[in-house]
Amino acid sequence: MGLGHDLQSITELEAARALREPDVFFTAAELAHFERAANPEQSLAAGFSAKEALFKALPAVDGWFWTDAELVHDARHAPRFRFHGTLAAHVAREGLQVAVSLSHSGGFVSTVVLVTRAPSP
Amino acid sequence: MPDAQELESYIRRKFAENVGLTEAELFSEDLSLSALITRSERMTNSVDLMEAFARTSNGLRKDFGLRVRLPALSLDTPVSKVLAVFMGEVTNPERKSA
Image 1 (cartoon, chains in turn blue, yellow):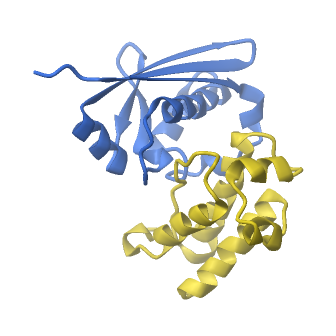
Image 2 (cartoon, chains in turn red, blue):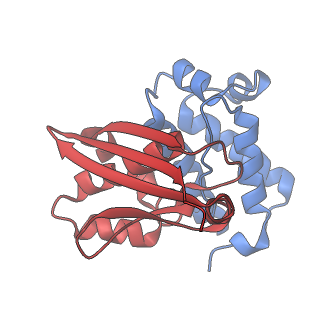
Image 3 (cartoon, one colour):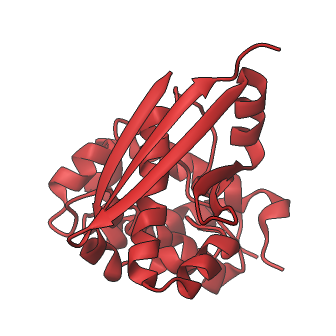
């Protein structure tokens, strides 16, 4: 099991302009989601925080890119990760399940990511 | 299209510019990412670090039409590894911009 937590100031992300270029740190779909959010800067900070928390929760995996962990939201707006590339292959091979929880208050975003092994069939 | 040596030189220069250190400071000691944050007066955290690498990536796209994704690396990673990942990205023909 792996557990990762990250606390991110929303203000710290406001000056980060280069990170908003598609397919560098975030996917184009993630950036579009942030733009549509009621508070785009808060949403961007949440995206950054979620990836940092995931990195802390995962066992060492070599050769993945930040865009391989795409933060998506279901119909109820609950966040989860959609994996691509090297990271997707690792998660599938190891039978990992990844849960993510986001919260924000007072100019900060807090994220917890839990990585567990899927039960054997 | 520049050759690999020119691209490496460009990436080294941009890394140094964007983190606020000289190329010699960065690469002669092969600083770890955590040491880089400590040494640089411009950077205090991982947001600053990612922003600096993203600026280099965006420069490569703008100047050469090459797309570079940022690697997920721990803070004890030496900067030479980041350079190697960038070089792997820019020399991969599938990574060229449309």
